[in-house]
Length: 432
Image (tube, rainbow, N blue to C red):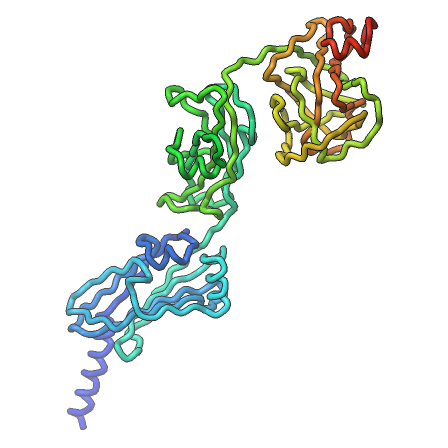
């Protein structure tokens, strides 16, 4: 009996030693790719290290992924594999495991629909079984986080803008990610050929310029790079990437696509001032409403106005180009640009509500104005933009006739205006 007990004790002591001789450790990127396809075939997202320090035997690797509530979302089970004594094997993708890959029913439906993990906190665990499915030790687990933020949104140059500087400043929004999740950006610019869409230009043409590993949400086109060509239209977008070069946001990390046309023509200052009111006066005095999303384009405007006010309140006037007219540049505080093009035909006299600070208008044509009057004739204005707030822009009028823009007190003889306007006003003097 004593001999039997001694043998049993020896056996019991030996079994844990064998179990401890097989170990599996797991490493996972703290912020891995959300795409299941990357987990299945791409190395670097996780790494399993399986060590067999005992005699040669068959081992089964079991890998599971759980959500923050403990629900098992994914289970990968390898086929029994023979491990020699003192063999170490490294596994870096689910496909290397072979065997069975099972998903939670609800999670599997999501995978089929989206192809990715949802955002959230997760845990990956690994353990070793023998060929009969008996665990040889406890699981080892590591937590990770899936991020899937919105891609960057472009800010400047505005879509379909006319760029007159050889070194434009490209700007876009940052990604909403933790500080410990570094983001870099890739800026790509492509020349658009006749008949091409902007997407075709960026994906089919040789890139005109590519900036990689950009760490800020703005980039000034470098001096010394290939110059933009006069009259040529370019498409551009930005892609957000993680430190491994993987897409770090939805839409493969890519922003929308905007375009701009380069012009080497320089602007001519046609008027400036610090007016207390801004009035648009036209030959057509018919009344009509101007809603928040109506459209107006200017082909000639005053080039600089500061601290524009009306009725004692500041006004915000976001403007953007519509049709083939010259663009309007706005510089100021809290300016929101609505880039939708509605091209509404507006006639008559309208009121525009909004708020603004430090507004600047610019004109491609550089139309000349009387420097004493700070006045300017403009033709065929239509408006585009979104106008929040309570301020009132005084007597904004729209028609297909020529317009007078007044900046403070002035007197202008109609003979100084284009013939179309002279015909309307005759020989009278026009005063603000």
